[in-house]
Image 1 (cartoon, helix red, strand yellow):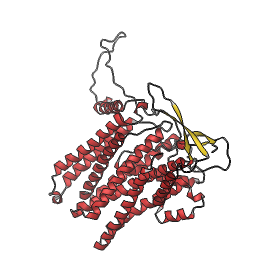
Image 2: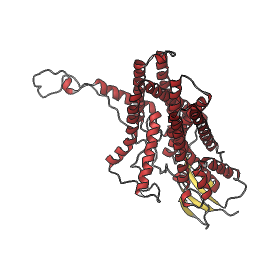
Image 3: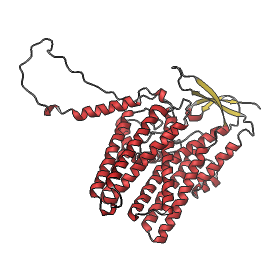
Length: 477
């Protein structure tokens, strides 16, 4: 059983960022900057409350008699308590023989065109640790894009206005950037585990390095572009941000309404229709927040029972990065045209070029990850480079082809029936591989199974880890 390092990293980033934000807000108060103090506290407390609610929702504490845990969540200490509980569970493994285990079945990566299925025994302690890891993976994403990302943007904007970086503000900015990159990394890992749920996925260190570099360049560039643009065109930054946010927030709902699918009712049995609608709105709100700063590896699909699109759509990814690159270049060009003497201390053309190159480097690391480091690249039904090349070719054809009414025409005599004098030219076509997912597994992004020891023994079928069907056996000591 693996040490719950990911839980420790999530809690460490959450605690460090909250502490740094509270200290910085106190300095703003001492300096009389009430607006900066209020915004710093807002981007700290709101994601903290959402993290507490997420942990309570996933562990189903409202339906259990745990008043002390609920009180600690109200005091915003829930992640620390959950981390201590996870390490206590890890430390107790092997000390007492468990009378109850689950048998899980996983497929191995194909070798020589064949994939073998292996069985593994999973005890109650390992099942609980899995629930803790899944819960903290989701809270890391929430903390990153609903708290750390706007916090980093705000503090960098203040640095530009004041032309200086204090120790407290610099510390908070570094922690916030690490939190965002880590949340994006957990989002990528979560997407892989959801899409390939019935496979034994082994993520190597080089894959983590590629994801870290990819997300670091992408997010840092995006934040700097938004800050520079907002520093010269304050009135126009709000429409740009709202347009981006509304597009990604409404897109899943528009696709859901156009599919004429029934309203999702299987999120949580205890939720009413109003509660389910609130949860779905929060999910799409988080989805929009992720796409505001980087590409969301988890694609929301409300008409799917698991609320997740398990297909690997290279065209959607290519269109996103093309449009985002064009948007960043446009915002930088507007900043360069409207910048004032305030920016005489920097070399503007060089900075513009560096930011565009940094975003291109992020795309390069993304291509390297999907082409060489993705743990399930053998299961891709189409090559990533071929899909992106086809998409680029299709866009070029669409841009270069003129409308029929604008093309020059000439009058010719009617042709007599017979074989044509010249053969028709061949036209290139491209197809969109939208449903290339190798499996159709079920996985609940909002909640996971909690493992408890049943009162009776015997053999029965129950939900196992990652939504698998597992045979529960009673083992005599």
